[in-house]
Image 1: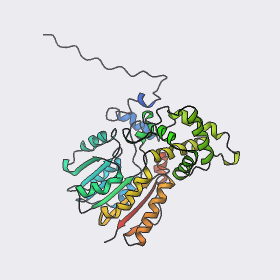
Image 2 (image 1 turned 90 degrees about the vertical axis):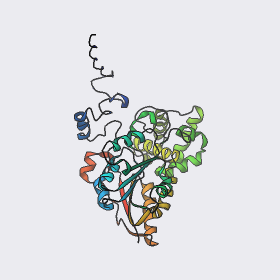
Image 3 (image 1 turned 90 degrees about the horizontal axis):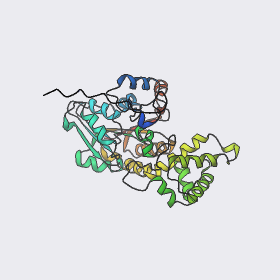
Image 4 (image 1 turned 45 degrees about the horizontal axis):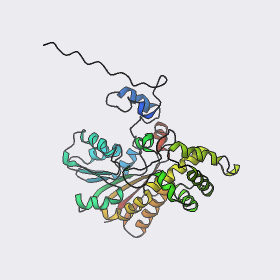
Length: 351
């Protein structure tokens, strides 16, 4: 019997130009284990490789919550697993990490990456759920409460950068924005349910949009003429509406588009509702002396965290809270521009 012919190497995916430009074409970045040198170059340029996420303020989070071997930690937003990896290592030997995330697409990949690190299987427990339900998760897995809790709010880079998820206006994709694509209405469907005043209030509340009413009118008028079902169609409407605003109130057109997308994403995923549930239940999730760290990326989130921690300190629920918000270092901001907006606050449960 003759030996089988050697398998031919696969052809490089075709794309226009010298280098891949679109998310799905960046095959090297999607396989960091095979193309470590290429991924390192992307990171060195201050960019986030496609399909990945760079954890923010890792050192600062570990400093304020001070994980110790044998403790039980919760990561409310596993995402790509950057914070979880450090927490899992820090509570060994004998500790456990409880991790949750609502994204059914990314969660299995992240769990596989974490389990591949070689820690004892029982040290990692993962559930697909929104962090609004973290109290029930903890009650089932650690009835006495946990020592540490970390929440990195907002969307992850691998969600934002993938046009198919509908979070970005930089490439065309379905106007979706759901963390869990099988649950609840998409952003496009939500636009069909809102009147002008409701949408304007949503833009003001969720992204502090200064021209909320006028943008609401223009977007819903366009949506009524022809349903806005793609990210580019929505972005184009906002850009066109922006040129009609009074010159003194314009600011940046890109910023206006970002605020509209942010406001819709928060509404589609009920992010403020989930955050409210987390903050209400947080004291009951922590053991006496337990530490929590919450990372936010815009003022609406930070205001809620700041108020909840201050109220808890006043009422004696928390023994200490952050005196000032903690920001990424200048070095981290240069290396990862997405860390610029991050704000970290922490609290310690009283005895």
